Each structure stands twice: as structure tokens, then as C-alpha cells.
Image 1 (cartoon, helix red, strand yellow):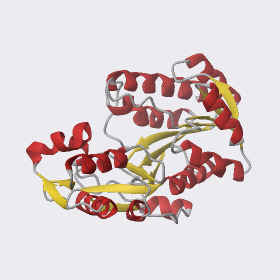
Image 2 (tube, rainbow, N blue to C red):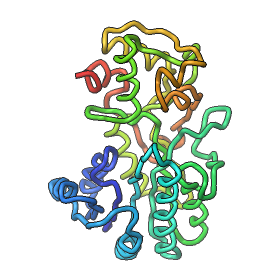
Image 3 (cartoon, rainbow, N blue to C red):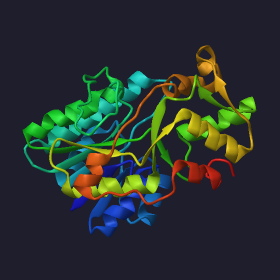
Image 4 (cartoon, rainbow, N blue to C red):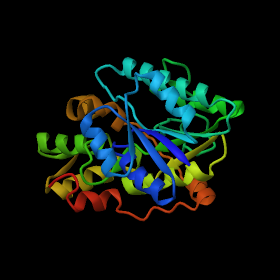
Length: 295
């Protein structure tokens, strides 16, 4: 297939690209800068100048492609509403262009969907509409599964880890350094999920090839408690581990605190059964112990 990607040079996208190329696909990726374009060329991707706000470029590339993989997001935590609007507009452009074609459209989503129990791939994302998180784009894409688009939601764990990651785990490591101890919220029993970046990249390629329209796949390798995360960080930094009282969670962890205190278990059992996906790369604790966030 001729695959058009957003986020091809990003944290997860750069792990997806070699999997797609190894599977025999040609990949084109949007590039916001000369540096990004050069990185894409080095990875075997044909760069396309543009960004998420250039909807005419997104539409043109979607119409020309056999499949679209949308992994980019502005991630502007200072303007979340603006980020959500941009995400909504991009996904609306893609699904409108692909309507009635039967072509696959895979978009990034997340397992941070609180349903009061372990989230499964059969659970619909309850958030919808342009004011919802990520602009309600998972629900929007799934609506188009009945309109001739092979929509696939790739729900990534909050922690997609590995060397050179600057995401949530890096923030937690920095908080431990700043405060002199590795903290966990409350009793530390609340659960997060984690997946190695390379395992996540493999799953995207598998799902793009084989997932039916309207499918959610879970890039989840393990379920870990926040106390286990704190203990692994403490061991990596040689720092003590201690609870952070609920009233001080935001002070200790910054804006990430409220999210880190949520209970967000998720299962990938159906994903493994349906697509033969088996994580084989380092666990979160192994990456921390190997210095992925501390060296």
C-alpha cells in the first residue's frame, strides 16, 4: 500500500515506519520543517511539506493514498482547546476524504478512558464532540466505519516508553529529582498501563493490514501500579520512595498530577488474540533500570 502518515518522524511514528516498510508498504509523511523532512528521507519516507493546520494538504494526500495513519498531535498543554480543535479538523478532513472508499484510516487514541473497571477493546470511547478530549476524534472516526472508511483506533498506553522518551515518564523522573524522592499518589494502588515504543510500532503495522472497520486495538504490554512506577524510578535514581498526599499531588507532579492519580487499567487480550501481537521488548521497569530516563 501507499501509506500517508502524520507524525512519521515522531516518538511512535518513527517506530511504525520501519515496520510498514518491512511489510512492503511505501510511506509518505508530512514534514513541518527541513529537519523533519531530512529525518524522514533517512528513514525511507517520502516527505510532504505541511502541518496539521494545512487541511488542503491533508485532503490531497489522503485522496492519493491507499491508507492513512494519523499519529501527530500538537500536544500544546498550554492551549488544550486549540490542540483539540486542530485534531478534530484534521480527522474530519481525513474521514471526509476517505468516505466510501473502504480505505484504512488508523488514528492515535489512548487507553486513558475511565470506565470504572478494566477497559477492553470492545468498550466504545464515551467522549464525543469537538469539545471532548482529543476533539472526540475516536468517536468521529468510528462513525465513519459505517460510511465506507476502515476506521481503526490505536489506543496507546499513557506510558509509551523507551530511550530518549520525553513524555510522561520523563516528567515523573524529573519530579523525583526535584523533590529528592520518588513519589506516588495516595496509597499508590491506582493503575496505569505501559508499552514499549517498539512494540507499539509493530502493533500499528499489524492493525493497519488486518483490523476490520470499527476496531479498537490496545497497545498495552503491562498494567502497573503508580507505586510500582515510583519504586522503579526510585531504584533507577537511588532515591527513597514515598507517598504524596492527595492535596499535594499537583504541587509534586505539576499538571501531570491529576492524571497520574487516576485509575486507568486496560486489557490487550483481544488485541493479542486477533492480531497475534506479543510484546517482546523491554518492560517499563527494565527501561528505567537500563538508564533510559536517568542517563
